[in-house]
Image 1 (cartoon, one colour):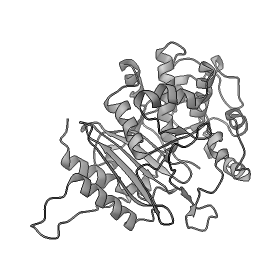
Image 2 (cartoon, rainbow, N blue to C red; image 1 turned 60 degrees about the vertical axis):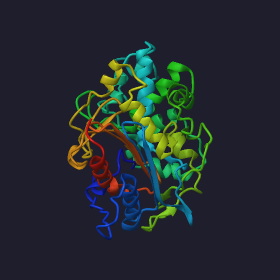
Image 3 (cartoon, helix red, strand yellow; image 1 turned 90 degrees about the horizontal axis):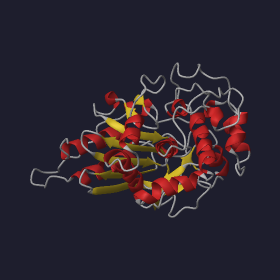
Length: 377
């Protein structure tokens, strides 16, 4: 079962990683030196493989660091792309909100206005309820058979309609009465995008989001080819407790089943966070405000204080008491986090190439380092 974020247990494992001077006469370390030391220590401390980090300060200064391996003796390099999993929801939401701003659709449109009926899905659910996970629709990635079926035909090219037809059980609750994270809702949103525009998801992402922000290295899996090297993902394929290199496993079935997933470098992902939350380049003020209107509580997601329209407000208790927005993801073989430190104007992205996001406990140390060097806005 795929998760919205790296588990709370992983974050709560976070320990303080410290950099100390060998003697009082040595110069004070720079922020970059401290960040790099934290990444190296995280690789040495946990069962991780590789990690890539990009930090963009309010004035645009950028620091990029990596540690660990892609596979064998090949180190992680800054130009390597990682799958960002559920963080792709922010891209889906941005396209929907732009279409709403253009009058192509409204957030109060019901499903029946755009899509055919599907078993176990209430066609009067609105686009807004899909965006903020209040639809009650069953989360397809929780279905007991879906992963076995995907593994049974790794070269299979799934359609979004096939997934919706075959793996949606009874709803969790009537629409609008509660909250439950649902990948199904965002699959339906991607189907609406295709219906409303007559174009593929990848072309809409590229035309509306990637090209305007200069993030031409990002790609949508299955529909586009890589523009750079992809970091090998690691996953316990045979369930023996050890990670296996997942890069040689065909992944068409995985990414076609979710309607495409985005791959990005840490720098491009951080630039996306900056464009969305710091510079606010992609949405009008009204729709930005709607995106940032958070539903709370969010049962079953302890890392989340509130969920907006494709945006996460992270639980301050687990992030050094800071106000942090963004989105994370945990696709097969990878873990990803795109974070905006609202009080400091800092955008960052951290990417890990293991299924459990082994190096993610370093996040709080990274935040501690940044907030020692950057003054609040």
